[in-house]
Length: 225
Image (cartoon, rainbow, N blue to C red):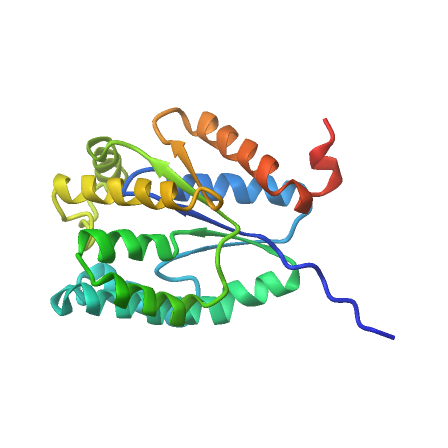
């Protein structure tokens, strides 16, 4: 008898600048998907696996910055390889959904555009690190950089700013434009969501997109109103 193989799960990523609400919306979407009875893995980058979490501390402390954008991109790529191998790919094979706070679009924006990294090098690193493990759907949460940075400062409290939060407003405006440009280039995957309304309004907007784009993978009960 042929063994049953579960259908591949769905892979959703959240992208955007600092303070756009990615982590909050990841939690909300994960909760909503689990309420439908789906197996869901919530994860993040850098991090999401033991090896990648070890590299996260190095990256966010700024230790990789002295090696320039290429060095940072290499660190992110190494973390991403471990993250995919240990967490993302096994979950998708099990039929679980994966919801990730940042993925390769952040490397494209931070090291690629803001860091002025050679696009050919960036593309090569992406092919090696990501391969065919690409998101089915990416949400670009969009905010003016001034609002995002104010939110990030409030969220951080007395904790020190990380490597990227320490950059100036012009840097973060560059990131915003980079994320919007990615979304414009890949509309079949990316959806821009206005991050200015309340958490509830943003969450509802995200859910409407999930229903519209991934309807075939949702349980029947979620599609019948």
